[in-house]
Amino acid sequence: MAYGGPERLEDVEAYYTDIRHGAPPPPELLGELVARYRAIGGGSPLPRIVERQRAALADELARRGREMPVRVGMRHTEPRIARAVEALAGDGLERIVGLALAPQRSPSIVGYAQAATAALERLGAGAPRLTMVESWHEEPRLVEALAAATRDALASAAGAARPWVLFTAHSLPERLGQEAEAYRSEVERTAALVAARAGVGRWSVALQSAGRTGESWLGPELRSEIRRLAGEGTDVVVVCPVGFVSDHLEVLYDIDIDARAVAHGAGARLVRARSMNDDPVFVAALADVVERALDPIPNGGDA
Image 1 (cartoon, one colour):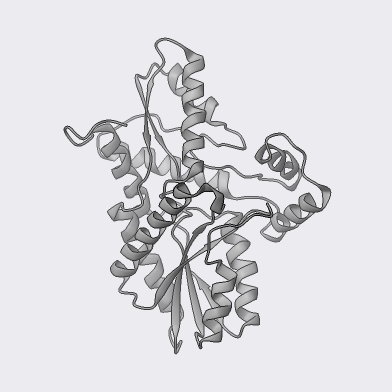
Image 2: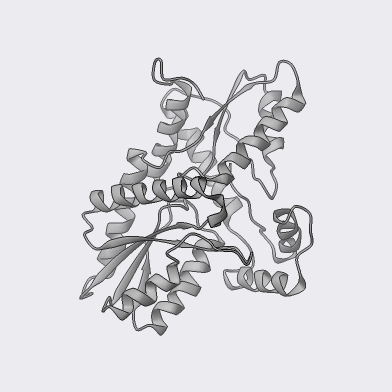
């Protein structure tokens, strides 16, 4: 399961309206979002990438002797989570594993689970049961894949006198309280594991892509951290998104365009670690997560 994204500029308004629970966006905010999608090529590559991830995961599971249907469900664009659940139920399955393509538990994960559960409830008696993966932020092969991407990014910055690695994830509103802090802790844990695996000594965590809601969001904020680091003499900032596993707007615009411009203006260079997309080690991590959900640790429960 994933958030979804508009593949064409003409789809942006419907997507934005869906995110806003059916309320049409103000023209100025819509225009700004359309401009951002135009800047990254005219739409989101996320649906195509998630389809590649789906196919690669199905192949990896089959290679392990676990042939099973793998379907995509999106929260805000087609194919919707409900449609994926209905299709799986139509295959006569007894059990569904729900895996959100976000390693750290956040309110979005809860939303995915609620959408899947509601679809199952509508199906009534005999519907498959759902095992929802709530978090996989410490998954060993995820850490391995992110560490490899971080090392490659640092290698491309060879010659930098004082490089620094910023591990990033999407921010959350501070009003979420303990839920937001628990999410931040998982992001920091993923970052620490990746830094240790990659042999990175100079690093920190920044949060990005806060919504335009007029309220306080978790920090430290990515652009502010870039300015601070540059002011302290950092010449290259390597950004590794540990909360995103695909190329999409928050990576291709918020990091590659917006944050890079901030770094340039502050006298530093920004290098971004590649996204996971359908990286084979990352896909193996997804398969490990699915297998663990299918075969829970004895006496450890089944979500």
